[in-house]
Image (cartoon, rainbow, N blue to C red; front, side, top):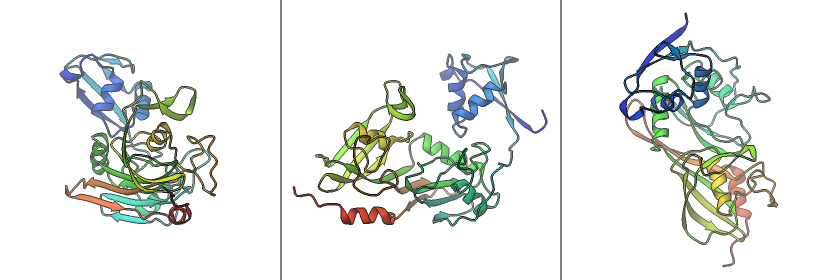
Length: 310
């Protein structure tokens, strides 16, 4: 079909017997699972002359063909929204995302998003791997989380950063304030995360979830609260929020995972900031590390929280 790119892959020995949807997610880490599922559902993946279903089991040496649709310009208006730029070159852009800014356009949030802003700033120089609504975006942080986010300006950069995310080699250190006082100075939480079977809008610790590891270090103890640094070893949806709730110390202001906890401060969502982001540059191989300063609301909280009496 005109406008489509045909790609062929050969199933390696170590993937024999695996489902094609899982194989594709391994072979093409820069494509999201939802996008690969869409290709399978639309009959864009074939093997042995047949259209493959997501559950098809593959054999070693079998050829698989993908028809990748031509990149389509997103129906999103670039907007001249100021960006707090931490680092920029011809390949990547690292920004300090403010609170209450949505990353991806979605129904109800088609304007004022980070994507609208970077489309204006980058003027068409963005990767297109992740689909129509997500140019340049290779990872995300929640609307109410502030801090460092990397945007890719071309597909080669996107593939490199996506691989580093998959290999857990990107450095991501967050600052957070949680309820309660942690006894230990350092805690590692290793608990699998998946969709909450009772509420699909939430994530939860589930036996069949994806492995998730968070390393927590206490920075300061207050009366009833703790200021912590959380280092992500993996990057699951809502990982820090779910893990901190799991150990009985949900994040201050988190109205999803800290239900039943009354926040005495006027916060707009959880007190969580993506402070440090480190990665290997896609072109130069140089290690780049950026630091996003704490937002004003966070600094104010640290100044007014009651000091620990212990």
